Each structure stands twice: as C-alpha cells, then as structure tokens.
Amino acid sequence: ISWSFVELTSGEELFVEGQAMNHCVSSYTSRCATGLSAIVSLRTNNARRVTIEVEPETCRLVQARGQFNREINPEERQSIRRWAEAVVAKQR
Image 1 (tube, one colour):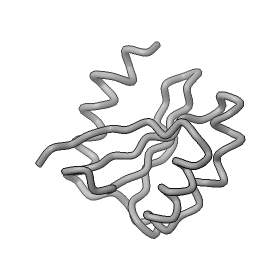
Image 2: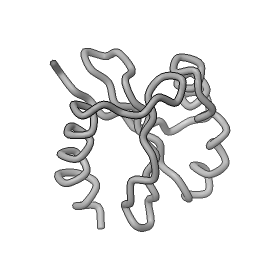
Image 3: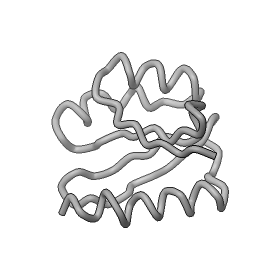
C-alpha cells in the first residue's frame, strides 16, 4: 500500500473532499483561511481514506475521520502516528 498525505489548501479542495467522504469538512474553509486549522487528506493508492484536522499553531492533531465520519482503523491510526512524528512534529 502506498500512503500519501495531501494538504487541502483551497475551498474547492475542501468541497471535493467533503463530497467524496460524505462529511462536513467543507465547512472548515474559514478556519483554514484564518490559520486556525489545516486539513490533510490521507490516501492509499490515490483513494481517499481519512480526513485529518491539524491545529497549525500547536501542530496538534484535532481529529481524523473516514467516510461518513467513521472512526479510523488501527492501520490508519499507525500511519497517521508515523506521519505526525516524522512531519507534523518537526513543524514546531
């Protein structure tokens, strides 16, 4: 499996993610525009798996949800943990 983490940086990208994942991430556009949140799409082989919210100021992972707001599974949790340790924590 090829895991990728794609930061969503426009209202259009948030809208497309919300439509594809059937959740309300598009409502985070103003939070992202003001720097209160950063949204990242976790994908495997280019298929969306999880949408992640990060608080940029503290680099804290706020939430991670799959399609229809499902909880993440252990495999996804492990991948997110490794990413957070290698990439997000180094942003501090």
